Length: 377
Ligand code: MG
Image 1 (cartoon, rainbow, N blue to C red):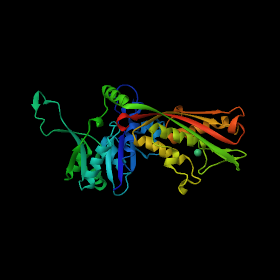
Image 2: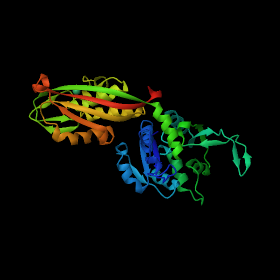
Image 3: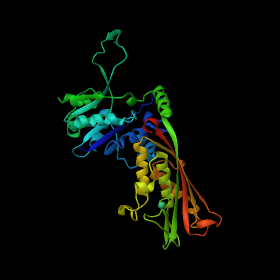
């Protein structure tokens, strides 16, 4: 069954200190909400983002969130979930998740989805309570008590019914409580400490220490050459540039993007563009090279990685790169789903020496700097 995540990011939480709501605060190099989306992307079919209307500009500034459907949340978390749920079509397993729990281990998501696929109305991740508990000076027996995390997984029809029928004056503590109130059992699966909610500045500092140390820097290098042939334009870094010749290649012969893809794959240690998109495969004949970049970016995301920076050098006598540099930078940033500040585009001639100097073809070099979780290496 289709799995859709409703990612609730509409809270105003400012207990983490001054500045934007906590889901937009950076941890290990990017905002918590970006980590949350990156963690969910390889695990679900769709993501519906529920944000506060005041945060539109914050979301628009994050290219990693571009293209996700955005719904404005309500006055309570329950209303926010209901509005997100209204954007989920048909039969699905819905994962209701909080952007303030950005580090979702794949195995927890798998346990939740399996439980619902096996027939449960809903499933929640839980962890035992390790500390002693006390209420108003009286020790509470912690036997049988569990901490409940998100994401919480439900059959869409049952969760819709739970929201539609909610009449209690009191706000529910979570969606599982609403589904139980309908008389359905919600099963418990093993949660994970990495799913801890980021609330205070101390939570962010702890996550930073754990994640920052766990991410390992990697550098990948790419190089590509294409020969000039008949034509009236070239594709360079995803931008069409009028020229008195074209570039010859199996795909659109975009040397810049090809070098970039090899740099990303190099950083991952995962082969090269030819092994992922064999020239012998007719599917890639005439293909637009942005498809190759998107594939490589998805591979980085699936590994939980971050693209810190890319640096490209285009080597040719003509066409002139300078007038197109800004457009190329913008397009590459868009394809990598990063800010333009993380993309550098440079150009060089070879002083009329060699094949580029003689105008026989163009070359490009790229370097990509990535960070990858150590446990995925
Ligand atoms: Mg090539």
